[in-house]
Length: 346
Image (tube, rainbow, N blue to C red; front, side, top):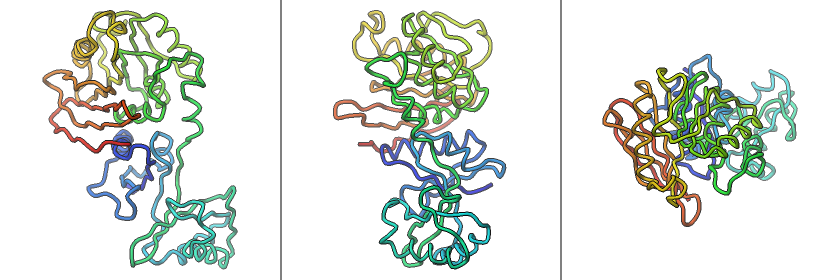
């Protein structure tokens, strides 16, 4: 196994940590038993040797970059001199303070060591990026960036950029986090029984999943198809109707995950039925068609749901969207587990 450190973003640390750990599991890796002691923004995971930090970074919605340790504490300059032997240019920054290099003694010393060994500094388009992180009185540790999240691409999937728009939709960074909480893998069959604009299925599809969706509003299904096509994603089957009653042509095949944002608010959005009641009814039906070990991820400001007696809640992460709205990211899995609730994000 290889150890990778993931620098998470500050918008929702609790959800970001859970996303990193689930994404690593989807890649055949695992969270480590203890958090990184180097910096509170770093999450430490282990990946199989054949999987890279770059692959992990591409999956993530609430992270900045993946890194690997390149020096022991206090041996940064020696490690930089060794790196210079490989040729190419580098940039050196301080983790968490990327624009403060000119006044950072550690960064300047690392750069001098690299140049003295024949290397070239290029802060604009370097061949390699290194980051310093403090390790107390023992000195800095050198980390190398092995993968970065594509934040512009994520921003490019926001609702205002899509052909079919609605006032309320899950932002793509949060939808990607939900897909990772579901541990979506290429080829997985993923269902959203409350399709909406298709935001959740889009992120699962970009991770390689086969997509199935239901919505009672034909306009929403047509709009979701437009959004998926705009993003280069194809759904296997989308159905119009009451998700508690309609089905799919491949009815007997199990699903690997359910990923959904049930309706809430006005009862008219659910055909007159109470939003809580319709979510409970629909999730109870479809949870029985998820394979053992599969997950149900529900994003909602409403109460917790019970997918069925064989399911256990394994995670509950509240994320404050704005002053009056907190969304709960709830994860259920077939098999024994205990509920872990982690802090609210502001």
